[in-house]
Amino acid sequence: MYERHGAALAAYACSFGLDHSLAEDVVHQLFMKMLGEKSFAPRAPLAYLYRATRNASLNLRRDRQRETDLQDTEPWFVQHGRNYEEAINLQQALKELPEEQRETVFLKVWSGMTLFEIAEATETPLNTVASRYRYALEKLRERLGQNVQKRG
Amino acid sequence: MGPYDEEMERYLKEFRLQPIRALEVAPHPRRTLWRRLTAAAAVAGCAAGLFWFARRELRLSKETANVRAPNQSVLNERQSRTTLALTALALADDERFEALLAEESRKSLPSFQGEESTLKVLAKD
Image (cartoon, rainbow over all chains, first blue to last red):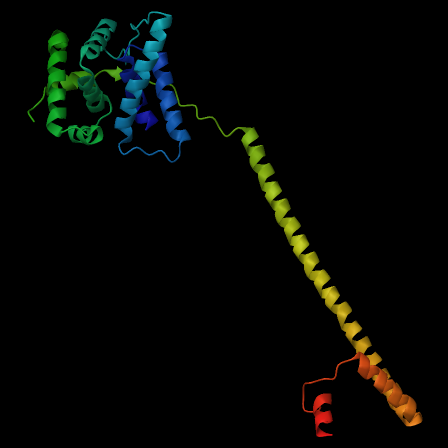
């Protein structure tokens, strides 16, 4: 599970303003906690991990902001046939999405869940999940439309 | 549930996420292992102690039983000797024997059980 979803969870943590190494720490701690509590078995582990990542990231960001301004220009994505600017634009666009939409995009695109699975895991009606995803993609296209068209 | 922008989805999937460093699951610390071994040794020690104690008790109880058995035989022997001595006394000196019986009857109660008990014999008389 860590190998399959760890990177997506870390990127999701980054979307709350953490740099990648802090995001890794958050994800590590969550998995260690899950491993440490043998009796702990959430009904939907992946949805639980996303929610826990969100809460931990917000807490950490709040604590760190008191100490220093966080720099969040570190890319969450590997430069794989893409330039740095394009990756940063995508990051920025994802960050601007409402939380529920961003979570849905991560679960669908980078954790590979179907909309039905997301609805089950997040205990949200399927139509709501589908709408969130559709709206999110529309907003991302508005922001990144030129890049998408260039590729197409 | 309407259709969504699949082209946009494909575009997003082209972005590979930064890999996350391996999860370092700390092996059980040696201290924990030692604690477990110590606890296991203590339990084993207690079990061995209990076993030894139980065997010792069993052996002592057997020995006590063995000791009691000879005592009973000694008593029986003593009683038979007394019977023989009394018979001899009755044959040799009747008056003394009667006096001895009278003296003993003051010290011990007669038997009230069995067909040949003292009480029944006296009742028949």
